[in-house]
Structures are given as C-alpha cells and as structure tokens.
Image 1: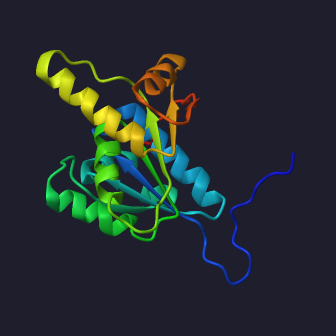
Image 2: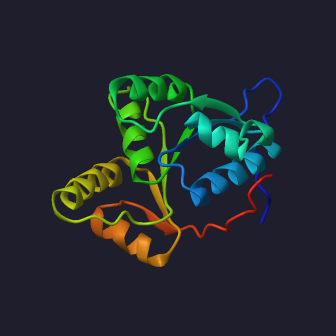
Length: 179
C-alpha cells in the first residue's frame, strides 16, 4: 500500500479542513488537537471552530491549526460564523451531536457540496421531550453526513439505525492533555 500524502503539488493550494467542536468535552477536544497536529504535519490547513475556552485549554494553535471562536450555540450568529469559516473548506469534520447539527446548518443551502464527516464520541442521554428532540437532530445529521465515525461499535450501529448512509468504526485514542 502506498502512503497517501496531502502535500500539495507545485502550484496547488493545500487541502483545507474545518474541525468543529460542540460541547468540547475533554475526549473530543483532545482528539481534535491530536487530529489537527497530525493533519498539519501532513500539509493540511486546519481550522478549529470551538469556544475560546477550549483553545485556552487545548492550544489548537500550538498544534499548528488556526482557531476561530464559535460559541456552543445554534443561534443565527454562531451558525453564520461557522458558515463563513466553512465556505472554502474541502472537508468539514464535526465532533458530537451539537457540533454536527451546527455544521449541517452552516453547510446547508450551498451549491457546492462540502463533504461532512461526523464523529460520535459518545451518546447523549436524555428522557422525554429532550430525548425526542435529540433523535430528530440525529436523523437530520445522519441524512446530511457523508461519513459517520463511531468511537465504539454500539455508536456505529446506532448511527446506522438512525439513517447514516455510511457508518464506520473509528476508535478514538485519547492522547495526553497538553500542559
């Protein structure tokens, strides 16, 4: 198997990816920092959209990525900020349900379809009306996602049941937290 390089041929722009964090739990934030460092090392331009407190804790810019503050909200201002960052992306990778839903909103209505990769790190537990709302959001995300990665086989099975066209196991190793 020949290794794949993302280094740009002479005269071409590097690949551009946007990593979107939602709640910014420790596992997904550390995972995004690790991904950013690996992608940057391979010549990919990485932008991490996350609240400023996640940048302060996980230092995405220290890994070579650009950081854009995007609040943990699905309000129109936050979605518009995310839409602007994603406008020139070759790929958008969202982590968790809330980040994924915001990415779907930001990418919606565009003539050029940007691939959306969604990673489920865990499942949101809820009851009653909140559980129903979360299932509606999940179905919307699954319909829009190009690929869904689940950190466990249970998450992959759940993504398939919810309507994912392409769901795969993507185990997430939890790297050490930066000092």
